Each structure stands twice: as C-alpha cells, then as structure tokens.
Length: 137
Image (cartoon, rainbow, N blue to C red; front, side):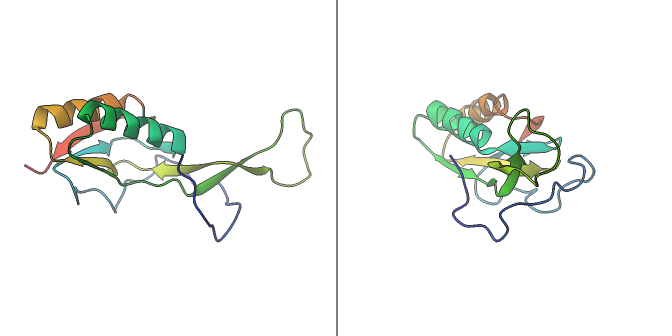
C-alpha cells in the first residue's frame, strides 16, 4: 500500500469541492505511449491505486513498463463510531490523492496497442472516476 514516509503536517483540512476545476498539471503523456486519463473528480485512495496497478501488471504478464502518476499524500481523519461532538479532530485513517478532470493516472509502454488498451480498460473499473484511454500516436 502507498503511504508517505514522512509528512510536514500530520492532519490537513478538507479542501474545496473535488469537481470544481480541471487539472493543469499532469494532463499529457510524459513516459509511456498509452495512458489512463480521468474525466471526473474524486479522491483515490491507496487501495484503489494498488488494485488498478495489479490489474494492469497481471494483464500485461510482466511485459512492458507501467508508470503510476499519482501518489496518495492527503491524510484523511476519522473519529471512532458513537463518539460525541468535541474532543478535537480524529486520528489519521488513510491517505488519498485528489483527482481532478484531466489528470493522467497510469501510463503503459512496451506492449501492443490492443494489449495496452485492454489492460487500461480493465484497470478503469477499479477506479472511482470515469476515464478515457489516450495515446501518443
């Protein structure tokens, strides 16, 4: 699972709406020939990233190369169940990556077009956002 080794601030504030704006960074392919691009916004946790990565790796049968362009570094806190209001902010439960529309999340290279598209299509089912497959050709 993806977890930051060290963080500057242990607890963050929530931030604004996840679907308000589009992404300005990470919208183009930088490493591979094929990529999976988000069309909607959501928080992607480390379990979802790992699940998609395993799906791509399994379908490619360890051929080609995969780049993961997202890393969960935003801490999400929770309070225990049936705890009254007050007493401060809860403990860090897990980490997420806030996805905005336009972000390229995964890239693949070194395999044929059909295999890359199918691997990314299968991985898209594991993610909380609607996606499209883009290519450099």
